[in-house]
Image 1 (cartoon, rainbow, N blue to C red):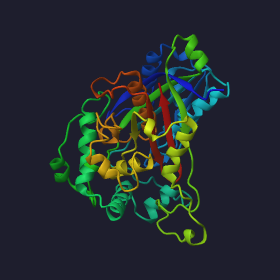
Image 2 (cartoon, rainbow, N blue to C red):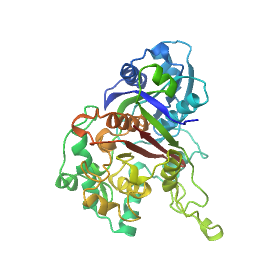
Image 3 (cartoon, one colour):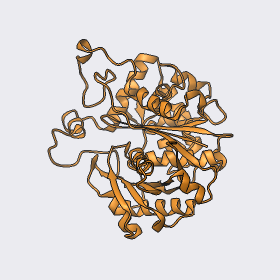
Image 4 (cartoon, rainbow, N blue to C red):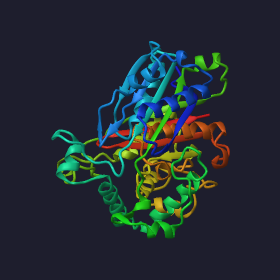
Length: 396
């Protein structure tokens, strides 16, 4: 039995700061995806909502919120939360329902109305919550986390602030071509270097903003797609949602010290490498087959790390790959042709779905001025904090 499911429609609400509720953004994205698929809301057998957040914490009934806003019609409903991997978990849940025969058509939606500034802790004591621990006990906000990763790359691999700036310059150039992006202006390396330091060595233009926005995809069984007249749709061929293996020697907050590797031999495959590897194995492809990748560039330094985790180059060679132009349009493996989070900002439950939207448009040849010629296979990658990995492989 094929594990492929068709992507019949993709839609987004533009990213920005609009001052409206998350459900409104999700409905705009959902209606755009349905129109793209040539379907009506009543044709949908199930809706999966990626849960929106406030101050780092979930608490909104996303699936039912979107279903109510679209109009009750009896569809199955589910809500999922996996921090920044929530959108990929929504796609995973939708795909699973289709492959299980529970629905022919499933709508996956994510949307957020993010707070101003960087994410911060909500009130109350949550000593069992990793977000509470890193915010309240360590004082480690997101920029702190990003800065530590950047410093690690500088210490281990010799990356420089100039390398980080090159990532921003590349992604801003692509975001300038994307009508859904929040920031549609090219920037120079000098402008990056002149922006304020936020978490040394990262400057303001090295770090993604928080944004409002929404994204949605309509998935269906391949049989339904053929009956619907979609003979050669974009297909989701794999979704990876793996967790780390003990001991995880590349430390994540709040676990900033460990001696577990003294007693237990570490797994040879680090967590984020395992995310991509599981997707490749399920899809029957490898990094050499990719036409493009959409990765989770919360900071410029983190994009370089994903090059290595996806197997686009060897360990410590991410900056070299960037300098060679391999990850730019026209290069061997363009990364973040959408403009990435550098151009969009974080709308947490929407961003992994937005990555699938970009793959869909690229594989259809509908990405306009940012189109990657001959795109046939794409991968997305991101990480929800504290063990939520996600990657999606789409093919045409």
